[in-house]
Image (tube, rainbow, N blue to C red; front, side, top):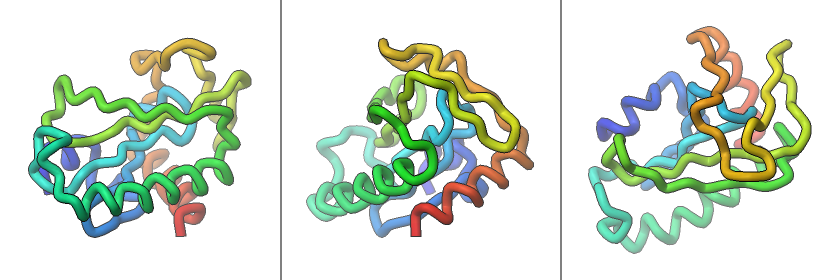
Length: 142
């Protein structure tokens, strides 16, 4: 696995895997259900991905949108390709909503709604909470 995938907690954060992509839970949750869609390759530029990876990305995105619709009933979904610190190709997937969501007794407000997501306002999950949220989300990504 590439360093970006490892930084986001793989394998503990793995929701679903594809041949070219991984869907990972984002351990810092700016909104409930925030994910990372990470390319498995060592590519550090989007244009370096294979044609097959681009084709499969559509399948991964469809799985994300179905799974998050069921899990947190988002109103909008932001895909952010930032790659400022973590060099390998990945997207932060941030569900957006106007009213806070609750999971397992934890409130998850969308601090930036309706503007850009506030990634610095994330709920920091404990390792146990990460395991539980991965389990809860994974059942929606079958």
